Image (cartoon, rainbow, N blue to C red; front, side):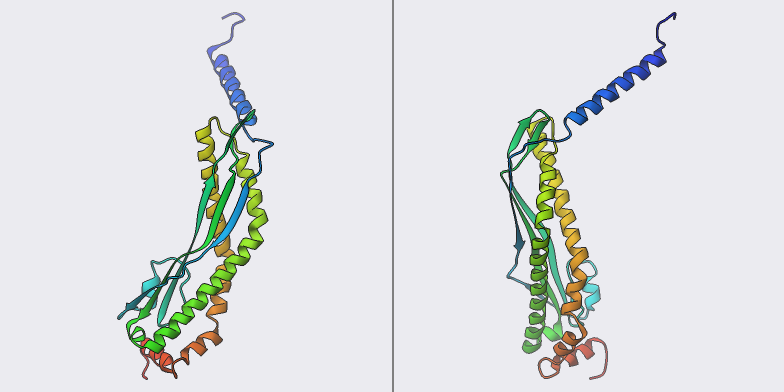
Length: 238
């Protein structure tokens, strides 16, 4: 072929050229700069209503086996406090030399309790005093979760703001893709934040509300009737 290139050498050259071009485009579209500020607000999700179920002839361990949330350790009751996230975005797509970036005017993030549910052993649910004592214990769990979420939001505010700024800088080739890119990143951020809360706070909440001393005091409620029902649930003689 004289001084001409072989087909193999041409293929290698073209592949290298295309790869270089792709890398150049990625580098150029890597980040947006000089973006307008976004207003981030993080708030705590709350639920006033708790759904109560009376359960007959089934251990609490079986009931909560397929449920998420924070189960109470109590023999007569299973508490499910489902924690979740919410988000609302006022999108604002900005065009620049790097492409398009979504720099929202406002981002609203909610973290907290999305659902409350209690399963009470039938015999306990039929005793008004015992049922009231158990629901008061559930309320203690809810308040402890609320305080933990409040503290977590305050601790994480600066980090969430920083992560939001990083999401904004991700560029895209068009406006629609910029919005989808931001929303996908925000979804990952919400999932990560929820996991961080659960990893850092859940064990402490359970230990504080379901401590040995608190559960002992609960057993003595209703002149000891609650403790008697506990023994019955364990199959012990009264």
